[in-house]
Amino acid sequence: IDDEGRRVFDLRAQAGQRDFGQGAATRTWGFEGDYLGPTLRAARGERVVVDVVNGLPEPTSVHWHGMRLPAVMDGGPHQEVRPGATWSPTWTVDQPAATLWYHPHPHGKTEEHVYRGLAGMFIVDDEREGALPLPRDYGVDDFPVIVQDKNFDRDGQLRVTRNMFSDIGTLGDTLLVNGTVAPYLDVTTERVRLRLLNGSTARTYDFGLADDRPFALIGTDGGLLAAPHTTRRITLSPGERAEIVVDLRAGERVAVRSFPPALGNVFSDRFAGGRDTFDVLELRAAGTLATAPDLPDQLVPVERIDPASAVTTRSLDFAGRSIGGRSMDLGRIDATVVRGSVEIWEVTKLDGTPHNLHVHDVQFQVLSIGGDPPPPHLAGWKDTILLPDDDPVRIIMRFGDHADPNMPYMYHCHLLYHEDQGMMGQFVVV
Ligand code: C2O
Ligand code: CU
Ligand code: CU
Image 1 (cartoon, rainbow, N blue to C red):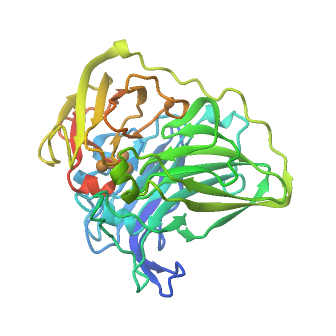
Image 2 (tube, protein in one colour; image 1 turned 30 degrees about the horizontal axis):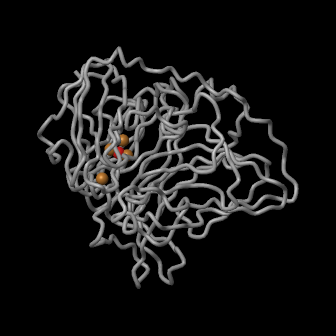
């Protein structure tokens, strides 16, 4: 805490190396270490400042994915930090408790920077969440689970690869959780909360437990659901998060697994990871487990945004490497929205390739998918959503109060190769 009462974080991007068991040290990038970065944590209402230092040999940036904040603090491609420079964004955290994250966003190089290891979690706390009987003892019954897939070359180095049959960017054959190959977690309580983050550049996962037991989905990108949703699977495309609570019995071992995700289009499916299964993380329960309270029936009220309050409906078509037929231009504003206003965006994916939509600064709600109401796992706050083939997805959102006609926010496909290739647009809030 500094003398202005702000919570201060240090975040130095730097080169390092790590032993991933590839027979040689792998050259990596990380924040404050050799790979990934510290979990940042702040409460709603707190003012934070992050001293981002670029210790890398090239420009990068740090974007606060899922955070509501002024555009000049957002860390997108307009806030690049030169090598050796320090950038100190500051803002007041003003949104519900949620599992957010941070990662670089340099123009055209986001895939590479994230792939080398630059990313971390940002947990927001609030009083409502704090009053619920949920596991929240970080590192004891509440764990970050950052899932990434990697390719290593014969020299044990990270390799960005292209697949000639599916242009979705790098898909790896080796899974990491929090930077560890073949990870396990010693569990000491009968109920654990896992904060799943798909921090991969291109791969979509369909998470479940290896023995198919149900678990409780309690939160999505922007915060807790209205009530726990009992399910056996949760699909996460790149950038999405889910908070799940898993029950364990003393002495047992069970893996969190990724099952083949439904990616739509039959041809691209197998080349886009649609047939792949991975064991992600083995949960190893101790011989005796500390008891945990039952999950509450209700979590937090999720106020529904009224479609009648929308001032505009915009249509965005996703196809190839462009949105609405346009490729990203840092000098062009694609949409101007009024601060505090509500808009509906109708998003349709037309090309049978996996794409998702991420919008900066907002958490949105899904109104409908192909005309149907959203399933329970898409009924809460979201900032990133996997797009189905052809069926329009209607989302509704209220924009923030931080007006700045000169500095845009981004919206884009979060398959980072697509983003780098121009599948991104810019909006300003006026
Ligand atoms: Cu997580 Cu614009 O990104
Ligand atoms: Cu973002
Ligand atoms: Cu895409």
